[in-house]
Image 1: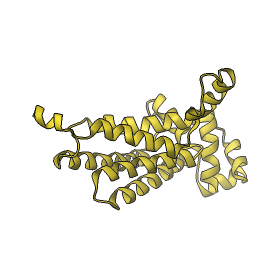
Image 2: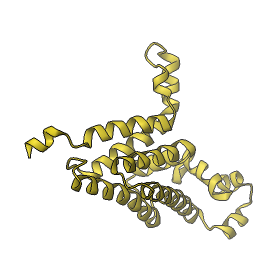
Image 3: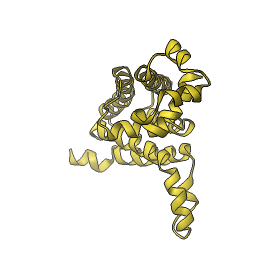
Length: 204
């Protein structure tokens, strides 16, 4: 598929570094076919990002909406993101490149899908706070804790591998757990941080 192949090129080279010839070659088509079916490089890049974020947003909303329990909603939110970063070789590199550039090439369509993802988490946190399950928190910071940690963990694997070769006494098996396992640990940490405690109630 053209978008899938193009995504891998963009992940490796970035938007500026990817050439149309490389994108067409990776997709197994010529430049004329690429232009005819998708459009120029900018259109192709926008289509790649809108597709991946729409798919993630759809999965997040479906997973979160499948349970009324706020803690379980948080776990499902994290699980979807962990699987997205683990199953896709290009999501984290592309997203981190965009963050580093200030979103210079990030299309509005992708930003709207990112808003859906943030909205699902925000609604859960607000409802959990109202119901006395969670303490008041900055919802965006919780979002950054989850999304930032998972994307950095996924993108960092090659560096971890190199370090493990040079410093085997430091790097252990726990540094190479799956993205899903990493997600489970992040969910535990986030819930431990935001969960309402008897002490919180006394302070009020």
